[in-house]
Length: 137
Image (cartoon, rainbow, N blue to C red; front, side, top):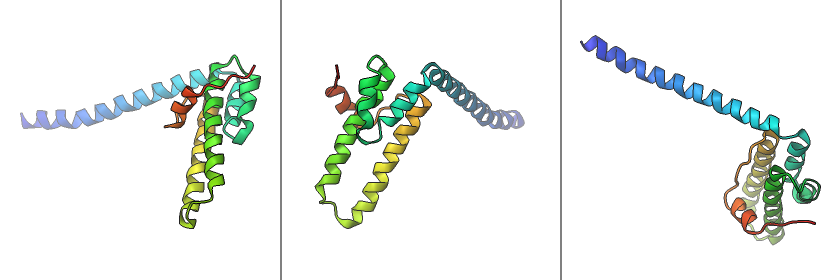
């Protein structure tokens, strides 16, 4: 009887691993399907929206695209925050390097997700982008 219980307990982690792997594969396929539904031009414009003040491009060019607008609004708030922090010049020299790394990691992460077709939400930035919706007519 001990052999059965030890065998059953050994099977459970293996079953959990298989279930997690299956779930991960399904999620990747769902993300790929979403990315395939979004036109390539929208993906590229959304990614450009995180490069400084190029965020106005998707705001102007793709006003009807919810996907582009999502990334453009986040990119605008991020650009304003980065511009503000860059202009302060009050960071101690020891923090400048860390600030630059964090800044570029956030920007590259956002560009990557925009190109992959994901509508990620940057903490704090997303909340501000929803609060201050900009529309260009």
